[in-house]
Amino acid sequence: MNKSEKSSCARCGKRLKKGGDNYRLECSIVSDFDGYLDPGASKRAPEELLDEINESGLTAQELEEQVYYSLKQRLCFDCRCRVIEFLKDIS
Ligand SMILES: [Zn+2]
Image 1 (tube, rainbow, N blue to C red):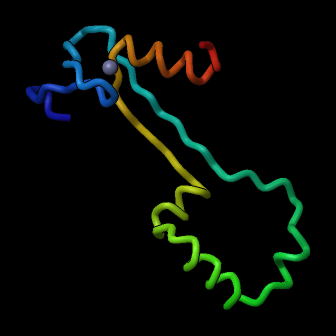
Image 2 (image 1 turned 90 degrees about the horizontal axis):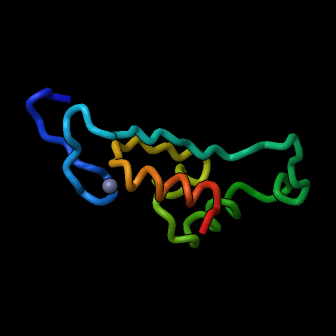
């Protein structure tokens, strides 16, 4: 990032002050493979799977994000606290 560029919290838009309580959120959610393949799925014809994908209405990006999604954001202190509360399921 350009040092003269002002940055803001990715969630609330509040300006992030230089030297302030700023945080970097870095997370990824990756599809887990448990070593088990559904025998029914492997017997299906490729055309059938393609039809199912087309009928889902999901974009290529949405389908990709179902397998791997990553996010990097800069946050203010308040948003950092809200994200942690959500992740810890504290309400
Ligand atoms: Zn914020």
